[in-house]
Length: 471
Image 1: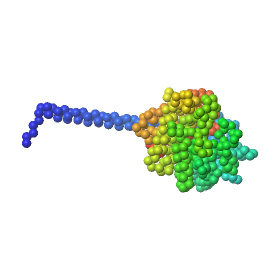
Image 2 (image 1 turned 60 degrees about the horizontal axis):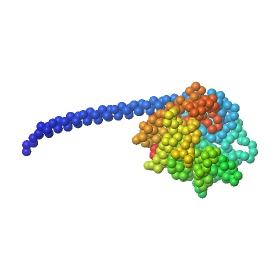
Image 3 (image 1 turned 45 degrees about the horizontal axis):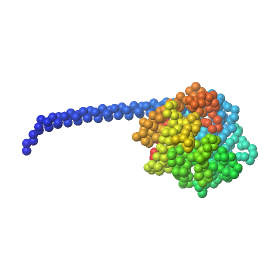
Image 4 (image 1 turned 135 degrees about the horizontal axis):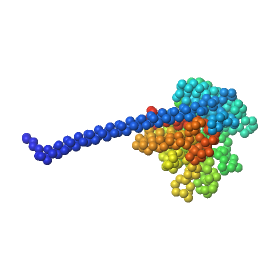
């Protein structure tokens, strides 16, 4: 059979060949362009990692340590002025002291050439063990004076929140050193909470405890603005965090059970389906809400009932971390819940002009959508936002540029409005909203280095290595 080609067929064949050539060249150029873009993005991430790591070392850790170590009485100084002069009030709270132990333990692993981190963590552990643990009733005191003396009187109370941070710091210190005494104390603290604070009926933990561990019920005459007797999201998320740290060094079955319990409780009960955490609850997990009250009543009770964007982005990370540590494969429920919390914060609590998360919002009935009721920007929420924004970048590549762009904007906000490039440390509030914080204390019992360190250290690791939490 003879096959013939018409001039048209020959022309079309030639055109097809040429077209394929053009397509091949186009695809090649596109691939080169994509490869160049990928390389540029990788270089940008490495550049950001170096910048953040430098700030972490020289603008956060160096001003604090070893200056914060109390060489006379042990533990860490609580109070610093704006220029890092040691302040007057040096009472020591379990939360701050344990957080310093955690930071020094983690920094000793990250920067092994700086020997004072491990020695700081060690003397911090000794202070917890010898001065803040209640030898008579167990559990950690909430507050002691600089020397480690416990307040005199019958008003000594303890919290699950404070004891959670003790576990958190002790577990990190044990992971660093292998000191069995630290692990033993962490175990004892967990068992003390299990015996006294854990609610076997409704699950979760009671926050307010007498010295002997007895949960404090809500008095009938308690002021409506008081949180006494309520369960709460804040102690719950930090118990989750503490059990995550503890389970990694002590894979006990009961610890695992409580870690799972707290993860599901936070994700499925404390988290509102709209994407934020309810703050306070009755013991049976009925939300404390003033939604149906007047605006004046709502504002008077804002401590108990508002949207806290900082806690939401922080908890997104803590839930994903817990799921990862538990080894829950393909846990899309937790992943989507975490994404929803970050997205809600970005949609309603994000300053689209300067960056940064606002402090408080509320769903007021007379307003459409969520209303910002406190447009200030505290330091710890901004640090947690760095962490969670980059985590979302890693887990949702289809939205990578959206999250990554906001991460870059957030870091720019931190550099411009929170980091004191002259004296070191971070201001307590963003000075775009509250310039007076330039001369406010850099440290007190509620402000140390824990949020900043975690947000920055995790960001550096993700920028350099990729995901730190797999689900």
